[in-house]
Length: 568
Image (cartoon, helix red, strand yellow):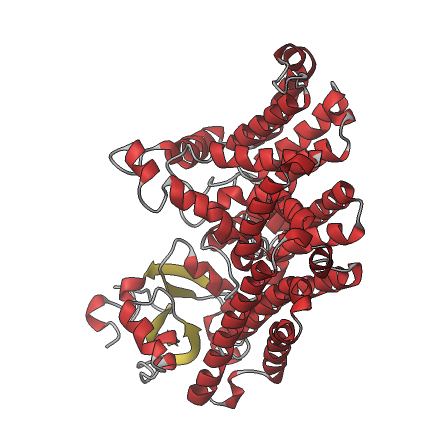
């Protein structure tokens, strides 16, 4: 058994090299239009751009009257600063702060794992595990509230763990620091985040003031812990309340953010709250599955960690026990609203990464084999898609570096097949190699090869361009494709013919099948990846008809005015 455990160890050198690969995976395609993200990114980008254009920090601005105060101003201000008030309006400029928050959160997870194990390699491993989670990769790079929110929320608990036990005994200093951190977390996302933060801190303090029989000492809690917790809550709410004090229209914040955005999530989405809780996509069962969906290719190692942690619960350190408590509190708190999403569990994932790193050497080789095999399947699919697209689009579809990345990723996956002793060491690198392979496939269709010609960009500059969108503010991405143009969205149901009316001098982006001829009046076209495929389209792609179903062409057109003269 000892030999088997040693085989599952990851050396500090391998763990450090894995982190270098992780950084490369996170940096690759950071400015891509096809990054793994969430549709909300373009809503926040539009708010940041419109607010920057106003020349004022507040009130927040948007081109959608009903989508202004959707979040506190933290993210918009971050985007204003990173783009220099919109003067450098690029996706990289918007997104690089997200990487800073994400890497800083990974560093906190690594430090806690190092302290819990007194082993540097375990700390490096925890940071790598956190970055390897699919939820971290998907939500930790785009221009979203999740990266800063996760950093500041987890930062509250990092402070408590790092300076434990003094942090639990402090009556003012630590409660003040934690209150400020919690306040920034609220200012990044919502005042509602005080509920999980407060519940987590209460649960931790109750764990720390247990009597000899294991039950909480309520008297000690009320006398020693409660005053500091109350001060933390007051200070956090005071930081959030600064939004109301600084904004010239606080009534709009109350109406749009407090009532519409937050209290609206408590409304029953179905006829029965109990029915929604027990059945459907947002049920408790689907919500529980989110832990493994967030882990992505590390789903089976996470399952193995749950089993090993239970088997070795008597050996658990204080950091491990409190990490499990924090994860449980988050799960229970966000189980209560009718809108349940795996995104609400993101703040628990750094702690989960710490626990996984502590038990990594105890996991069965089969857990790592599933990760490597899953990575191999995805990399194989990317290779098949790449070869199929070369057949349809020509050898110029991908740069040479794409094939080098695929070859390297395939080598990482194949290595454990030759030597199974390397399974544990290759699991995380295989995940990051998969991210690189997918990113390389998608970024091949970004500008310049996937953009409009310089002549088309010049023709659109200063003009209104109508763009189809299947999600709120999705047309905002065209501000990066057609810099200087005034982008207006229209319903995607009309994407083949354009909107009903356009004013003189305005342009329209229409979408046509991949092999369809250019429409009349076309200035330029570009290839775009389609989404939301039907079952028939998926079947066609499986049989080899990729180009027709996976791609379409967007055409920039000088459209005639009036419904009667819309594009044929």
